[in-house]
Image 1 (cartoon, rainbow, N blue to C red):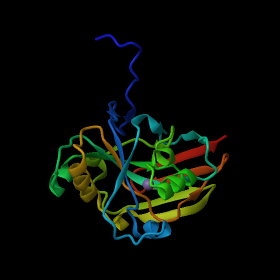
Image 2: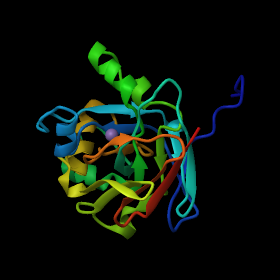
Image 3: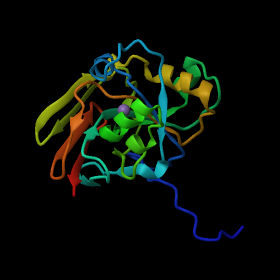
Image 4: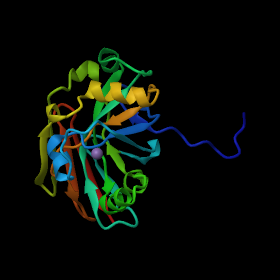
Length: 232
Ligand code: MN
C-alpha cells in the first residue's frame, strides 16, 4: 500500500566481514548490571534485572577507524557516557531458556548508552519514565556488529572507556550481575524478542560527564574501538 509520506528507512548496522547489514528492530538496555556501577548509583547490586528502551533511530553508527560526531543533546548540563557490550539477536521468542537465549545471539558490538543524567535524576525522584534521560536522538552510538561465529564467546572481555586519552571506565564483561544469556532469558519473559533486537548489557563503574570537544574511545576486547567526539 502507498504511504502518506515516505516510510522511515530501517536502521542498518554493518556486519564485520559481510556485505549484509543488521536491521535494527528494538533497542533494550539493562540497568545497573555491574555491581560497582550499581553501588556508585546508590544501590546494592543485588536487585532483579530491569530494562528500558531506546528508539532504533537513536543509533549513531560509527565505522571502525572513524570518529563519530555526537551533537550535545538539548536541555541537559550533565551528559554521561556508559560503555557497554551490545548483543544483537537474529532470532527471538518468549520465555527463552538460557540455552535458547544463547542460540538467539547473532553477534556483538561496542556501544555507548549516553545518558542525560540530570534529567534521568529528576525522573527517578518524581517516579516518572526515563525516556527523556535515555531515549534521545543520537543517544546510542555503536560500532559494527561482529558475528558470534567469528568472535566466539564473550563471557570474558575487557571493557574500557577513555575520555581525551584518560581512562575513565575499566572492567570486564565477566563482572555482569546478569550474564548475557540470563538477561536475554529474563527479558523474553517480559517481551517477545525478535530478530533485529539489540540489547545494551550495562556499564561498569566510572560513569561521568562529557562536554563538547571531548573525545570518547570505548572498547570491548575482540570488538574493536568506538570513537565518538562530542560536538556543540
Ligand atoms: Mn546503561
